[in-house]
Picture 1 (cartoon, rainbow, N blue to C red):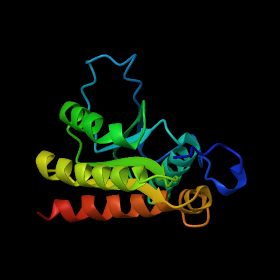
Picture 2: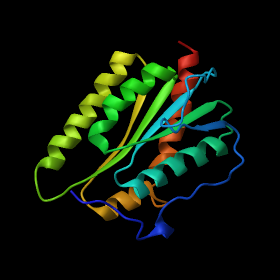
Picture 3: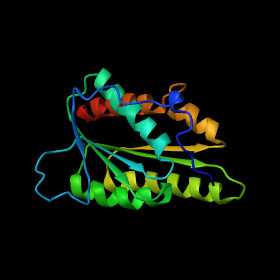
Length: 179
C-alpha cells in the first residue's frame, strides 16, 4: 500500500474561504472538553493516512456546503491512523455527538498484495453496519483506487468527490425532514 504526498497541489482542492455560511467546529479531541452543548448536524471524520487526498475531499465538501448556503453546524475531526480505524472511531464519535448525518473520508490505494481487497471490503462493510446500528446516514467517503493518479483525480478538481458528497448530504438532510 502506498501513501500519497503533496506532489501535485494544483490538482487538489483548497479551502474556498474562511467566511462560511455554516458553523464549522474543528474538534481537536486532545483539547476538547465535554462542555460543548450545541447540536451538531454533520460530523465529518477523515483519516491521517493519505492526508493530502483526504483534505482535498474535505475542502471540496466544505466548499460545496458553503456554495449551497448550508446554515447548520459541521464538526470535522481528523483521526489518527488509516481507513481501517475510521469505523470504530466513528462509532464512538457518533455516540458522543449524535449528528443527523456523518461522512467518513479516507483513501485506500491498491498495492502489490491482496491487503487492498481485504481492507476495502472490511471498511466498506463496517461503515454500512455502523450506519444501521446507529440509525443515521453515514456516507462512505472512502476512495478505493488502483493508483495515486486515480486518487488525485477523484479527490481533486477533476472529479471533486467532496462536492458530490456534500450534495448527497444536503439531499439526505432534506429528505429526512419529510420522514
